[in-house]
Image 1: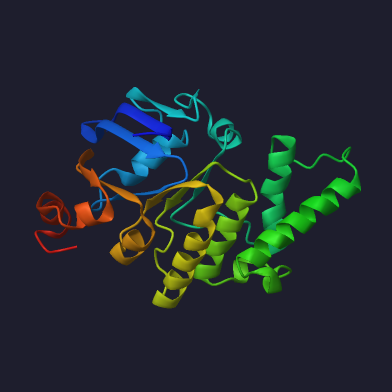
Image 2 (image 1 turned 45 degrees about the vertical axis):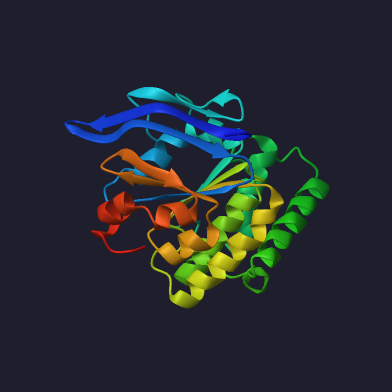
Length: 253
């Protein structure tokens, strides 16, 4: 596979007697959207947690853009160009939408989540303009002065995505980005992710909704009981009888 930007090699992770990940090998191509699917408990979120430094694997390595991520702290991995949207939106509910987006903007500039008073106000104004542009792009600009805690679930997910996009990541990890959404909000999220696909950003998507997966993915890996049992294009995975049996008890995807 050419132009691999993320290389997960021989990763294993156990929790007590439970083998969560077993000899995971995964290569993600630059600029592509790679979906990871599988039944509950397959190890999908554990794999993402390994990639972002929240879980240290028992063995194996994760290399992103030529840098070894294994053993690094989550903030170091974030600074290397990896951002993540979580299953439950991680926002600041008592801040406005604009303030929420400016927090990671300051972090990207200063290298830590802090405000540097020594930096002139013109630089802050530039960050504010950039934050407003991102909110505009995600259809949230009219709500920029509203408290984030007042948003619907779908808008909270879009806000968290805005907080990731302003960091200008090279790799975006989305952990069930449409979980709990109405069909209307799900379709809006699909349209949004399709729109940003042309920006050259690599994305990994964990998702149970097959409509979302087949709408977005260039390639799909299937996890079951902590191991990759199949990988291929959406059409290849859709027609794979092993996947149908493991994922849907033999029903067609």
